[in-house]
Length: 210
Ligand code: B1M
Image (cartoon, rainbow, N blue to C red; front, side, top):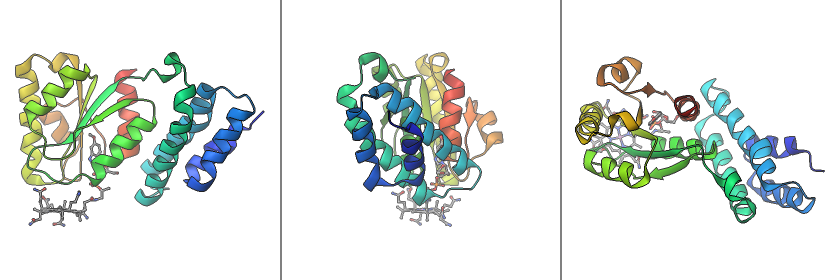
């Protein structure tokens, strides 16, 4: 039987050359796809998230781990039963209108997806209406807003206001992040949470949907 801790450690190391071979050999030896996913891969990404939060891993390394995770999931997808594939919830993410920065937001989306959520990433420069339309279409549980400019911080407030007006505010939790925002700002605009980095964001999403 495959030692799944080797897969966990390979995810943490972000070793894209090794991960697919290890996952395939675990499958060949009869380990269930769901077990490889949860005990091997997601466990690895959880540790990556913690290390990022503690400053023990940096953005390029985290990106390698997230890419490793995507490669591995592609192998497992056809073998996962509907139950094993069922996600922990749906997250709609985007950078608010007027803001073109998307590198941090992409990382946050990848980390959340790696921890077992379905993610619809709308990209940068997203209007409140576009967020609302997608939340309705996907029946989303979480709206994740990113902003990198002090000038686009008010757009986070406007997006939450539009959500209230649409009648959807009670159905979806809102989290925010990005260099110029903090917990005080999140409280002020009525968001449900703030995360300083991608690792904390994926932890926060889990807490809010638990
Ligand atoms: Co711009 N830019 N930029 N820029 N840019 C900054 C943000 C700036 C701080 C540079 C500076 O002056 N020192 C400054 C903002 C100042 C301010 O408002 N306080 C700035 C400016 C002024 C501008 C322009 C106005 C410049 C101009 O045209 N005069 C312009 C604005 C364009 C627009 O958006 N309308 C502009 C344009 C650009 C580029 C297009 C050239 C490019 C963006 C490319 C892209 O994203 N595709 C760019 C870049 C690259 C930067 C810097 C250099 C790097 C940003 C980045 O990607 N960091 C940035 C300076 C800097 O940060 N050193 C700067 C890496 C990324 C992984 O970190 O995005 O912080 P970050 O994400 C982190 C956390 O913040 C957090 O987790 C991530 C990972 O840990 N996080 C979340 C982010 N979103 C989250 C969401 C969450 C939770 C956590 O939950 C939902």
